[in-house]
Amino acid sequence: MNFIELDSVTKTTKKRNLLNQVSFKIQKGEIVTLEGINGSGKTLILKAILGLIHTSGQISVANSQVRVENKYPIEAGILIENPSLIEGFNAFQNLELLAKLQPRIERYEIYDLLRIFHLDKAGNEKVRKFSLGMKQKLGIAQALLGQNELIVLDEPTNALDKGSIADLITIIKEINESGSTFIIATHDSKFIDEISTRRLYVKDGEVYDEEQ
Ligand SMILES: Nc1ncnc2c1ncn2[C@@H]1O[C@H](COP(=O)(O)OP(=O)(O)OP(=O)(O)O)[C@@H](O)[C@H]1O
Image (tube, rainbow, N blue to C red; front, top):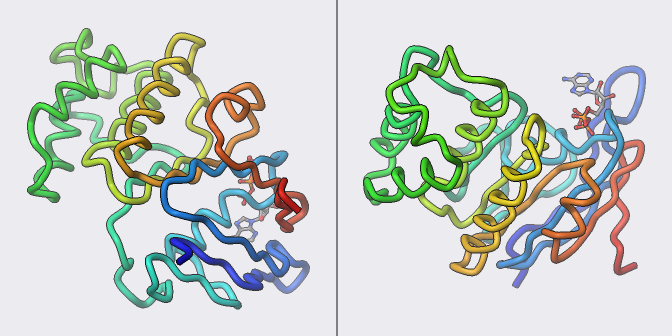
């Protein structure tokens, strides 16, 4: 059974096709990367899978049809575009707030993530004082918190130094081994080489599978 399935997904504006007959399948436990230049359609595909934009065609996740009108069929960890952070909170408080919405998340998970991304060193510092890279790492930590069945990351290596990217690769692999499926949009080819179990290429709103 396919975990995620897109069939002829198309998004058009009056002027042009942004997504053109996009079809692919993802199995549980894969780390799928969507690779393509700026403006190729990667973010739109992620948004379509999450039911955040209207498209034509069919999308299913965990056997349920994805529609903007419906509640999303499963819980997902999401980082798309800029992280949604509360600037007046510190790193711990931002993660704690998210944890309150998902009661199964335990406090130690928050401490683990802060330590992995070296955000524990920021102590009580408010997010408004964070560097771009620190904000990005906290946004990633939000998406990873709770080890959801599906984790969707858009350009996660943006603003990260080499060491942080290595930490990110380690933690993604660990969480993947415990069962989460990842879909990651990125143009970082070194990161793709290290992380992906399958590569999809996005060009002008069309998707090409490396296996075909
Ligand atoms: N709401 C919208 N209305 C009209 N055009 C849009 C909309 N959202 C995105 N686009 C266009 O669709 C194309 C694909 O955008 P998308 O954000 O998916 O690109 P991307 O591959 O994620 O690029 P990047 O790497 O720069 O984030 C772009 O040309 C963009 O301008």
